[in-house]
Image 1 (cartoon, rainbow, N blue to C red):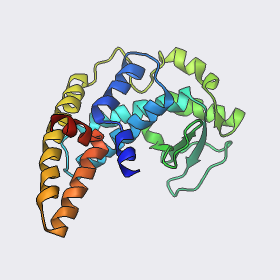
Image 2 (cartoon, rainbow, N blue to C red; image 1 turned 90 degrees about the vertical axis):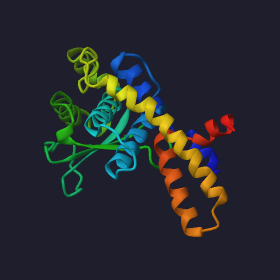
Image 3 (cartoon, rainbow, N blue to C red; image 1 turned 180 degrees about the vertical axis):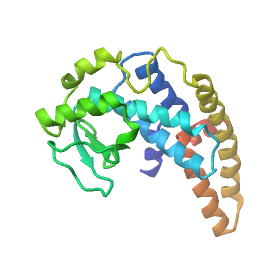
Image 4 (cartoon, helix red, strand yellow; image 1 turned 120 degrees about the horizontal axis):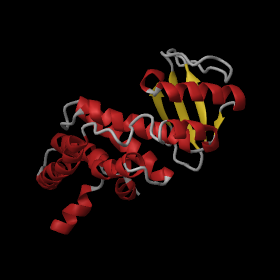
Length: 226
């Protein structure tokens, strides 16, 4: 079962492709793919902040913002607005800049299929529209509530498709990072296989799990090479 879960994880290079297809290129991508892309980017940024991988965090966070905005304004979901003290606000209350927006997209069933972003990291137009929608319809969001917003900002408020914002760097980090991760994973695999030291084995497995949280199931590629 654990093996199956690893294989279902999306790699960072594929997450970037999802972003390009649904935001940068203005295409249509399934909700499940966008959700998995957000999870992967979040995992990658966590690994980067700890020094485990090297990424341009500010650019990858923009990707996370854009994908979150895409789900928020394009798919049916339940929304929660929380204060900075994690207290829920009713639909009629103003959304504070210090608050947090959390969404639970309909059609996703995993326990971790919810996403959140600080209000200050959302586009101003999105925040204003969400405030209006919540006042009129409550905490159940639907795509049709945001049609006018999509027209006004060409479908991508957080990342306009006609603006180049570090795309070449992101693409290179996604592709080259996977190659580096595979090489390291292969070395770790053999260390885990050969070491008689339980503590080293635990450390190696933790590192392998971290790499897989960002780059997906590297053992599939490893098996092909072996």
